[in-house]
Length: 311
Image (tube, rainbow, N blue to C red; front, top):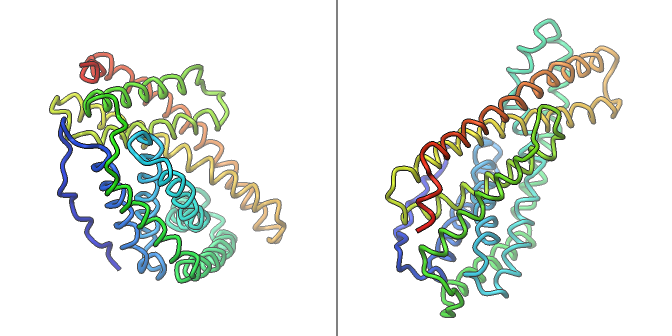
């Protein structure tokens, strides 16, 4: 099953755009695309449906919070918790999907333990099927349908809202948001080292994700090539942060699995060996994050990239 094509939003952003209108239109576009993926998500035939469903909802929710000044407070009080609710329902399925997608890599780590690895992954696949069924029933439930209607109505009301609460021009508003979040990324990176706890690097990942949403949303306002360069370098850093987050999640999962006592001695030893291998990958991923962040900072400073958001 192939993903439906995401249509390009016809409304482009300009320096005199009404953000009270433009922002909820964009959010509605993301939410509508997420809903177009429901059938594929329910089928469980292609995990990419779940991934893209979550990406669209996460982008919408993040921008709700980042650009909240342009949204009516009442609608914001509906959008924030309900978008989070929809995402939460697919968290575990996505984690299990990632394990099954990476199955070959785990077997490559321990080629001599194929028989016991098959049993370990048979257990993971069984859990995936159970979770897939739960998600399918959730998507078909009255609760889900009512939440979808609630969100759709809220976004439509936000689009129709004619309040003018922003004090600055569109470009000034964008510049302020982007610069402020660059500062948050820098702050989250301070004192990071090869011994930093996972949570510290995870916070940097979250701030980088928010910064990228802002840069991409406001891209129409910036013709300077340095803007696209900022997005490019940020993507490279995010890829490294994503790898780190994956190994962190995998370690937590296998440690929990080892404590569950669902396997025999041979499978327990295999899980222990996997954890040992993943620890090494996790340390390498941590160093990669630190190196990529240095590259990101260097590119930003050498190109004086932040100056384009200061006009």
